[in-house]
Image (tube, rainbow, N blue to C red; front, side):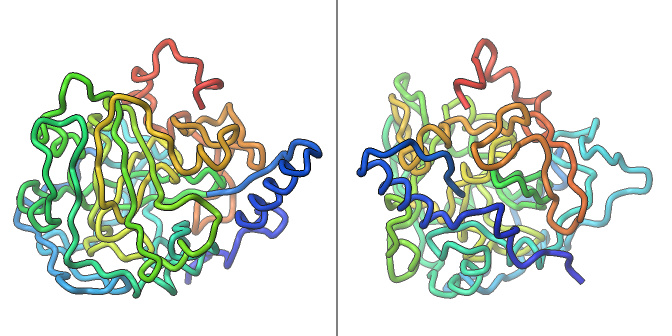
Length: 344
């Protein structure tokens, strides 16, 4: 039986919409500054390119197996490290995986609702086929690519990554997808490409949360191009051997395991390479609280949540948060010479 709490403690999280509206009220009244806000493996195996989504026409609330990758990964090996940091392979952690039930029922996806449970309730509205992604901007080979074409181009890989939310909860998720860098290389970036901007579908019928004004829609996120090209960065189309559900960002989403979860743009319809750093949704809403980089950093607290420890979903105790979410050996070099308190 899952130990997943229904919701975080009421005193821990102020509803984001309420907080942001209060923030605007305080600003417009020229009172005083508000202080809070909200938000929010090595390669295990290659599927050999044979795995293909078989969910043509499936709504966002139904997952289907992904061919030969359908078998869920086994439990951690006996004697596995309790630190969660594998010394063998950065694409897999030997920590216990979060249960499938918890991963698909405890979600931040404001486009489908502001509470943790609303995204799963509303995900059936999301139509997953046809689905295309506009690959554009500073690339020599721009094109609009059908999702199934993407899946023919790139073999699916399974990677077991830690996921850390800025709200100080975390999961371990066996994703299925392919490296973002493989797609970017195929698009052939120009010499002016410095950043990559990701945009979520804008459709208030399919994504009823976009009827609220909690954020400026559509949701936009971004990475520096070297972050986007890093081998750990992937585009996911499934988890636990099944297609992604709507509440998890179906049919395709960004996964950057060393950054806070809100960087993982969901239900992507545009990937645009740019010369200038893109303005992202959360940094536009609260630039002093949600930086562009958003690297997991236990030394830099969010105004509302200490980042020193985290609560792993399915566990009762808290555990220390690791710099870069445990991926420092692989990615710290990307930020050499930067003050990560300033560039948070």
